[in-house]
Image (tube, rainbow, N blue to C red; front, side, top):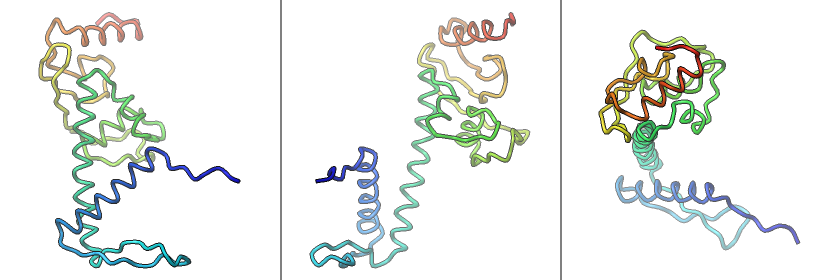
Length: 179
């Protein structure tokens, strides 16, 4: 007898999200459902939305909320000391030579969809992300990972911020430069 079919944890979560989108289509956007037989089975049925546009509206709402959450969690990750490179790695970005952190910032903060063919070309004006540093509790303006020196990327930390001072010390160690 073969191995039983197993669904991964993320597969189960995806199923719950699909079910939630369906429920929102019914409860919020007013469609109804019909039970339809699954081809090849006599007992099993599937649910079909009577108005698929309600499903489109529900999925669009879910996507908008998820995109806002993605941005909020990325800002929280930055506030907690995570780098744009780490965020880009979690996003699974393939950048075609552009540093993954820059691509993550461009996508999440600037709203530019990752494009491996872009090869580092950005508009002259880059929006900023704002978050509260968990080390110094100051409001930080994060202009992205585009410059070498940490002070050129983030402003607003207090002079005694241990996190920012550690970033600067790591930069000095990495580059061999002294401000």
